Image 1: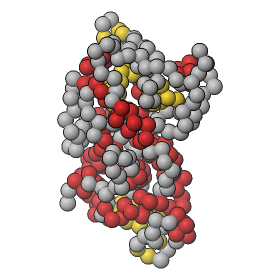
Image 2: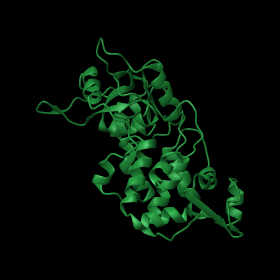
Image 3: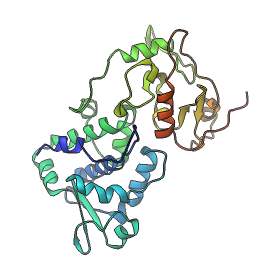
Length: 297
């Protein structure tokens, strides 16, 4: 059985680029637990809070429940659920999963394959990360689910990747004149930019193209905050800052909250700004919470 192909085809609710990472997050969490104890089952009542935190942190802005993937992942053939009454899930109701002592774990055949082929765990994890999350979040997501992958495993491309355009980074950095579009940072070592990255506005994992209309030149900090939904870009090309972000230090105010309402830095004349469709996708699917009011000058 080709487990990578099966996991690449997880059935997920979604349309028009809607993010639904519920099943991938549950699988990543289960892989982390399997890595520590291959026989350990996940009792829903014991892991519910962990799974809810993952959905809140890495899922779309709308509220959801981990009961959905805990029940529905069974239909993909990679997961099983047992209750105090025996095999089979009681449904996707939170109360039913708690009351019946529902315990989930990777399907027996998948567990056996992971034992036979130790490299498969890393391949499955990379596949899930590549298909559902941007690279800037891969490392911290592994930490969040307790999954230990070697740096080489995180960086090695999975077989499910579309071919990225290696020229995108340079095109985007040129369009923004090697300056962060949020703060204007333009650091170099000699002639080489340092700490500047080309961020996809619409995530590449969700069909975002490798072109300047879908890119922003961002410093490492603002790239991470952009992909986490703390920062966004409004219809008027001004910076959005989520009210969920809390920071009391002068540095937090200067580098994050004070950005609210500021216009983007760039792009230079002749370069196309971020397309409206990509801005709107990011606002719907990634940006969390209500935007802060513009900071007074």
